[in-house]
Image (cartoon, rainbow, N blue to C red):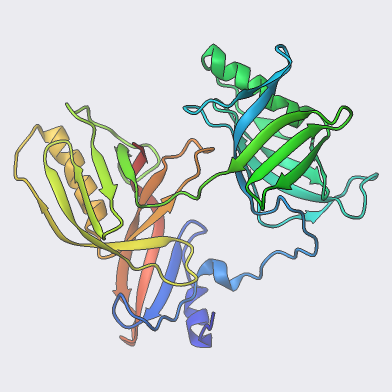
Length: 327
């Protein structure tokens, strides 16, 4: 990516760590883009080592239930996931082999989130003692699945990636018996059906009860539609993500809606949703299912021209205007 030096000087003046400023030449969208972000200026973290698990994402298909002494299918409606960072660092364990690295991971048992670091070699996986897990209580079948997944976090295990990267197998280090199988976890995508979690310019979102859920759908043909709690709406959208930017972005056009009037609370909630969609540019964030955050978050975004009129300044201040879960 080519970054013009004068843009770098402007970009270093970006506000807080949650705010990101992007500069590009001309009007959105354009084939030729010059961009700088607060993230792109910082050099990447050094990574001289590698492991097959780096940068991979998995969802469990089968887990070993110790009490029943058998592999059982993972729960479809409560997926168990493992997601590994795309960079690693040298292992600081005294007895670690030269080919062992420290790799951060996040996951979900179907009930609780878990994250930490693991000592990973090309064939072994051992979670560090400082890994953390939330402590929610879920229904019995989900807790049984969690107990089966915990085996991976409580001992050193062997692993192997098979079928050209389509299968991750964990085995007991002593018996060589399979204790878990995983398949690749798809990347989240905007083109999906969403249900509103809440609106508001903070993490404390407000939600108003409506007779039907508030929905938003993005389609592959460049159209979107939904129900705002009072009125149905639809329109067109286009991807205007700036190359190298920290956030993805879209812009909506030709939005139309029905014109019903409802209770003030519902009207206010709907207006906030429409405002989030009708920004000149809307930055958004897609979150992984292992997090408690909404799956899709629409962020407050402003577009202005710089003092010379040469560049547009796109500022994302980090405030979440609307959050959605997958329908």
